[in-house]
Length: 564
Image (cartoon, rainbow, N blue to C red):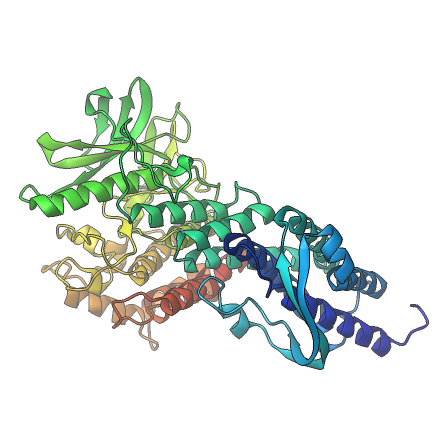
């Protein structure tokens, strides 16, 4: 290859790349058993996305490789990949496919076609990736999937070859692409509406990342959430079973209140022992005169939420694992019982409390890392189909035996009003509380008529980001906007408009001075531009796609890009 002119080399690479993508697209129209095909096509399309992402970052999609890349390695890798997916005989004999029909047809394929359009696969990739058309003639083969295990071997080889291309771009580009693909997997979980779709996404994630990944955790929670929206029969041993969920994803039985002893805390939360082991308890108060029907729905909602919170989570999903819930009828409340991060820890402090701790000095590096951790946690909560409904600094907790040495182990708690993001769910209105209402979007105030939506969580998160940067509680930042009348929808609306004022904005100017322009723009996005479709009460598929993508692109990625 050393004697070939650079343009000729890259033209050959462009042809090989086009052949690879054309072959992938042909195979992706395979037929066969519905569930197996769904999973196989999803995994195949993930590899297509990884290849198209590489083509953009390497310059191959422009017909000219970036300097520093090994053209010989790129050529050999693409040639191997093209021959792998273009060899009909080998695909049939070794990789579980069979040919049903074959005929040559003219076709226009494209580089960077993204993921198949449809409700199972995200459409946003098609909009994000630039397209380069390559005309030609290809064989329109109708493939049939006969052996999924053999086809998985083909995918594994494809994945390893595309890994070689990614690694050739260097550590920074490689890490960035891995991050992008991680967000893609979360988006697929977010958009999966049916249990079969979630299972297919879970299988694809398991093959690529393993069951311990955060995306897989979100997929499992999403599957459980979808399954529990149906009426599930009770088995003879008292546990809930469902034909559409694996046995490991069943609802957990209510805890026994008499086993909870030695509670020490307040009417919100505290430490206790459950059946002899140290635990953490959070309380959910209920209205004493609830109707029977509504009370039963809230009881079911509490049990369901406890089950969702009981699933083991990855290290970036910053929430305690719930052991279960119980009803404290004498005090009109439910208790959520959680395991402790470490059973020797006996002290908890909230972010709100730390603002008043003059002895605790939080560096800008520590505060930025805290903001990043919380952003990813909120992304996971929304991906799994939850609404938190209580994001504020008093619900960001740190556990220790004494004062926390850093902010790198936060836990987002306060799920007492959390629920599924579904039209049929009970949307409880909290009792008005000025300190808590201050963090609510004006349309999420207890006196407002709107049902709660994800963008309200994003708005509250933006206010917490402001607190973290200024290292002071919101009530001091907003003291000029909230008068003696307390928090009303009107006063919250005035505060929101003031924070978003484009000219002579002292609050945001100070924020920029303390945390920089990128961080400030993230806060502005949370408070303003991410409030999509605010007049639309129905969170349809396209709306969820746009909101999640916007949160990743305007909040999560910019925060992760910040460094001190």
